[in-house]
Length: 471
Ligand code: FAD
Image (cartoon, rainbow, N blue to C red):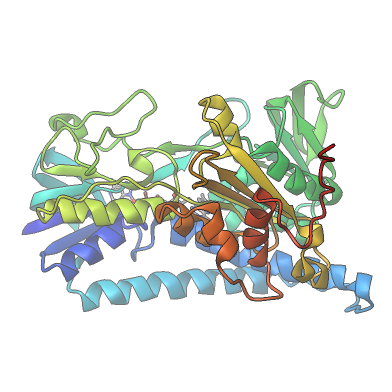
């Protein structure tokens, strides 16, 4: 068959590209190994993890309510029902995407694609091989979990993010290898369900990449619900024996001798799926880290082939993939679109949530960019007090000369819902005074963004700073 556009991979990069292209009038074929569009994000990532995190949050909030006199008693958790609900959420989302593909007349082929040449794909389906010829091809094959030698051993007790989301059971002792966002989100789920969770992280802090003052708020809470957090420590080996998984550690906080866990979750990062059969028959270039090299339009070194999403570079986030999809499709359509966001938000859905967008304070220091920082502690927020969650902070990274907002970081409950105001401010070139002078509804957590801008001007009503004596 011949098509105007073939898209390999139907995650938030691939299916968004296919849908935009179909809406623009192109004939589109979308290929994925899964039975419906959705990709890692919807089948094995963002969506199932957030469904389980919602359950974790309900459990934690119910426990927390005792602080203000509301008790529900000991929760009873039906793991089979929880798993079935999570699966139903995934089915609803992916089924809906399947319907949307059909409504747009996108031809969806379930199978694995490989390259015959720069314009021809071979798709291995359950009914045999199918050839697809296309004027343009978008590679949106995503990424897969990184494995660690001697740790990711062949054992059903050793999990990666995919198998951990299947929720096989609630282990009494779980070791999470990796203190990044996937490890902490899944660790949060299992801890809420009753597992004793230990997190081991090679670097000196959780959530490497986030500003330390913001990550510290999450770390403090994690410390209170985890059995142990072992920083500057790594796992050297995992052995499956009758008692469970025997784990040996080395490093600053390594426990003496080996420790036994019921399950080990390896969450140390993700690798791009650029190892597509036949890709070497094209001019597409793959860099040393395994990412496909693309230009500002997401075009590869082979003019008819584009690459978007996790396979095309960091940050490996669903919304970055979807935005690139828009750019690539517009480029194929002959428009002068380029991928040049000023800010890509990132959210860690732990409790509390941590979100940032634009320039972080850490990156400003690393790149010698002069910035002024304004912080508003949530202990001063009326809304945070009513929620009994003063453990939060809103932080603005501001250009001292122009007073432009360069970055925003928020830690606290619901930070993920609040960060978009920051992204909009950065994209619109807003000044700190724009945030200060925008009336925010009271009492809401969104006021902390306005109040952080007030702090920048030394005008916050709720943060008192004695004036320096002028004498
Ligand atoms: P993917 O979603 O990875 O989809 C690629 C698809 O291509 C897959 O379906 C795969 O089967 C298919 N494929 C690969 N090779 C072939 C081939 N040769 N032929 C046919 N099909 C092929 N991101 C966020 O923004 N927010 C979150 O909250 C979030 N949470 C996450 C939680 C977890 C546990 C994980 C693992 C990831 C999470 N992510 C999150 C990351 C997010 O899932 C990815 O950034 C996003 O899915 C990338 O989209 P993509 O379109 O590049 O590819």
